[in-house]
Image (cartoon, rainbow, N blue to C red; front, side, top):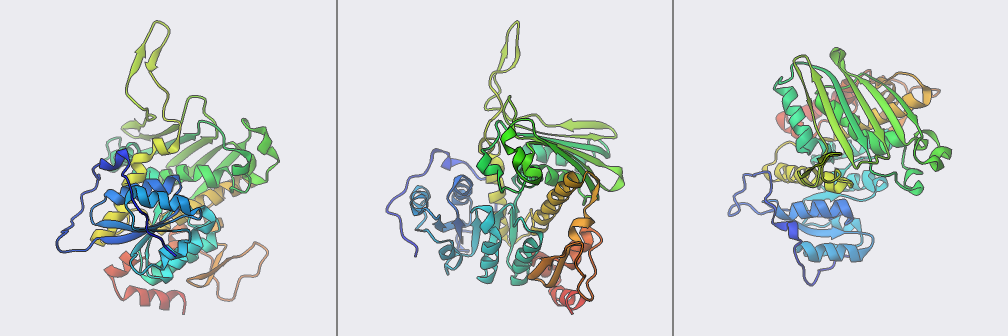
Length: 429
């Protein structure tokens, strides 16, 4: 059951003005009541942003270690806290839920939210299994609730400026996209073991960013990996044994994207993007704690290293994506990062993993054609040696997959209320 905290105190950054201005008439409209599952580092960042967003009010938080939930409730003035995520999901006052729990719980919690009619914001991934990812998305879309996936780099002002330049043709037509992600230091062995490999737990952000910047769905990928930093992981299976990896992604129109990731960077958190166009180039720099520079006879440059922690580097992006979902709830508008975006990011990382394992180009259609759904929320993966079910036609492209296997989301259904019935008759009859 949920408990009420005795007191609270706002943190120093609580006075930050929300970046998004929402059309809220506080005198005429009750605030949207929301709950947060998970009071770890990410959950606290989201909770702080929710607490300051106009038209939205947190009413319950949960964490398996209930003392963390109680501390969060006190800090942000949330009236209820609990150790059980289902208390948040089934709370009759809650209209939307932020899922900031460990990845292995995401899909089941998304489905539970859909079953209880709650809108959902979920940190990536939706699931590590492609079939379960489709089930979770379809559960929300069938229930008519919003689902937004937390791919926070899409909300970083540096990457957004690159996207703006592409859309405005400031550098002409895109030729090549490059991104890199290099962490300050490698994670412990226990984190890497069972984590799904470097493509799923690290490169997925860069792969999604290339799609975001390209503005279209990818065609195929070539990926390689190696181990240079932490030799202890070399005994792990598949791409879990890699601490360094590179990918080439082909997009329509001959556009190529190049991604490199490494689990260690001796000079701080290295997160950059570059786009070469037919009339110019735009590139981002790393983000530093300050703009101070030192000028000496043997050195000229930044006085300090770039941020060395992902929450410091992307704090504003996490806050902005939370405010974006709050805006969507308050104004009943479309979410800016959909379940489909989360699904395709997973498809890209799985294809990269397959490419590295088999040392060849892999078409993304090879990944999605393995998904078979007997109904929108009953899906499975078909192995290469399995017999296809009678009448099963594998998806031939990402667009085909998104249109035929995934139920239209709530915002598309609003555009054409009869579309849902047409879709079901077309696909599942």
